[in-house]
Length: 258
Image (cartoon, rainbow, N blue to C red; front, side, top):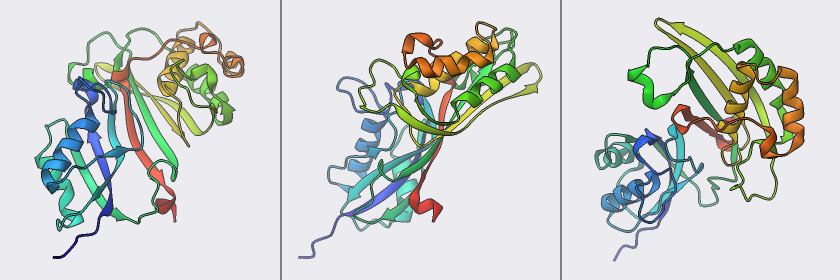
């Protein structure tokens, strides 16, 4: 009898998070991870756990979540994206699959991630994009937001932007960029925040965006961002931006940069 060896496959996953209680399996709730585990188990015929590189919150979306499965199956790796997507609901897709070696560490080998946050600041409700933005109509100073965001670039303690539920020992992270840009597509005025870093605390991006929006509305001046950052206290920062505007765009690994 031929014993098939298990192999590790890294997946690239996209999802609309609106209907899900976040990424992580939680008993009694519909989650992205649980839905993927069921699809993978049904495909290969043995129980499969799909590990994720980022625990996105309820309502947060992804274009480039990274997943990892360990399977013993003759199905070729290149067939996994189509075969898994065929077994998934229409708001989740597997975009890519590649073999990785035994020692591959899905979380430990991440070098950078990009989160993108989208706001619509004009009165007409953007119905076609309402699931993928924060509709916050009103005058907003985008240049002030971008100036303030530069205080977050570099290696800092981001405790002011971490939710109390974050129990990780170190709140020091490195942001490689934090850009705020705008574009007008009649009748809408869009504001986009791109935050690229080596890792993120729980709710960190949404707390940063909420703080930037407070600055854009004139509650604080851009130079106060340094004080907010250095306070290392969640109550010093701004509101929590809604989940709907947030998307995990991509995750890069050491192996990608080689």
